[in-house]
Image 1 (cartoon, rainbow, N blue to C red):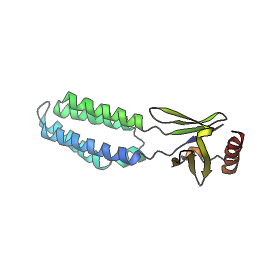
Image 2: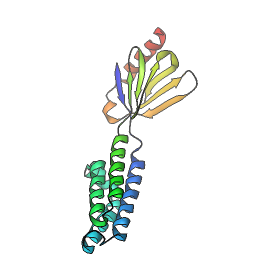
Image 3: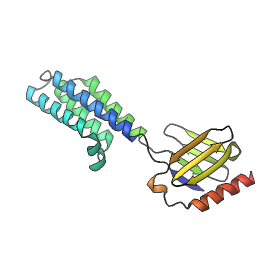
Image 4: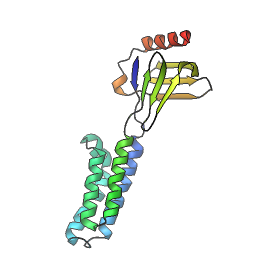
Length: 177
């Protein structure tokens, strides 16, 4: 049995949407400055939110800050500066949603079937539904009998799989079925 973790390709989209949400939160804090607390504190929170929207990638990758934590801080700063509880709750919800979507796709190759675990569902594929399954140059390729192809780069955690051994195992599974 082999377990292959696929590379997460949704990261750039999540960074872009996080950047947009932080900018909107900063603009909201600027517009509603002084409605809930002092105007100086509101402007300070707005400046922090707008500045952090430019450095989202550095904050998330270099400092290894969790996206949920970043959006929680943004929600808190937005609430402190504007008093908008619903908007702040929406930011917190979006942070939770991004954290949930950040999970990697996992492919499990077993004797009975091939299982693909997505974020919200699990797909079990019998060997009879596949025409070929190959691991080459850090790409896993599933070729289905109905001419569909699933191909994606594997994550660094799965680089230790021997390609020849894996392809021989899959070839033996195709010959057995």
